[in-house]
Image (cartoon, rainbow, N blue to C red; front, side, top):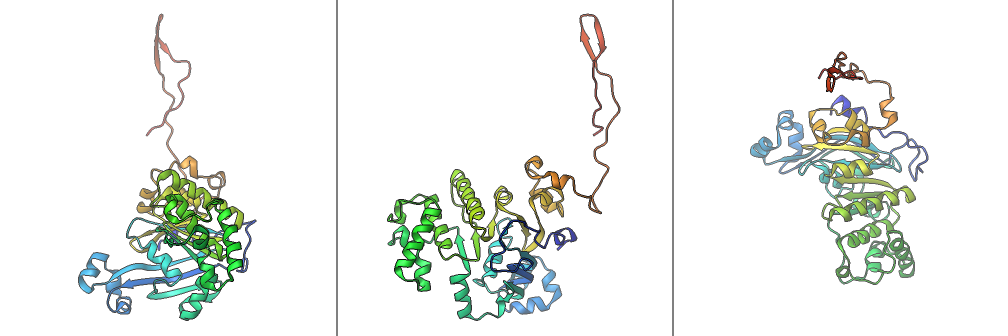
Length: 345
């Protein structure tokens, strides 16, 4: 990870956001030097610096292994919306699955509310997934033979919640996500956006400490996708739940994220706020990523007025001398009334 990328690895202070179960100065999630290697004998790959240095194609050719997550470190603060983004194959979905051990990391450290997740037993992991984590996937995964209210309450049913209590909670969350009146509809009677709202309601029903989203809106039409982004932003304002959101869409990341982690080939290219990524990209890859973002839509006055960084150029654009512009009129050619300075470039 570059120095610029490391500079924003810790979450900024978030005044006015409830800290939830974690202490105010303690991250909800802390990831340190996390690796995930697919293929035979993954530990041997990590033990060999030469193999670790190979690119993906060459490592696959030599050993049949793929390094999907490479030495990733970051923290997520209570109440933060932390976005992981990158192109297809960058390792973002594998990373978010490692955070709940749906995919087992090969090496590294992973703590949740101060607890070491990598040493947790299978039974304890099940309890964490039932009570502390919820995940919203790209594919809705709704049970076609169950009505909306029963799909929303399914996680509570698995948890062992009495029927009356889970139906009451499911009805509350259905109303919260804007599906009031559709409690008894079947999934086949719903649009794509409505199905995703059911998936979101199901994730919220258990009142988790952390919500994980794995590209949940990428299969939706643009208008519905924007509507669902608004819904997530509204729910975060109202509930303050910590969220880890995976996407390949930069505009979605900038719209939702307090901070954004950009991945490339399994590595962290940069972690930072939207204005840090757009105003001070760590390398050419990030610079190319944010090239088409209108800077005026992202950069804040606080960012523009901050003290300069040691590596930041301060010369700015050169200004050329005033030049005379000749304007023809009925009396001949005369100098223009105002000919301001022009850029030398």
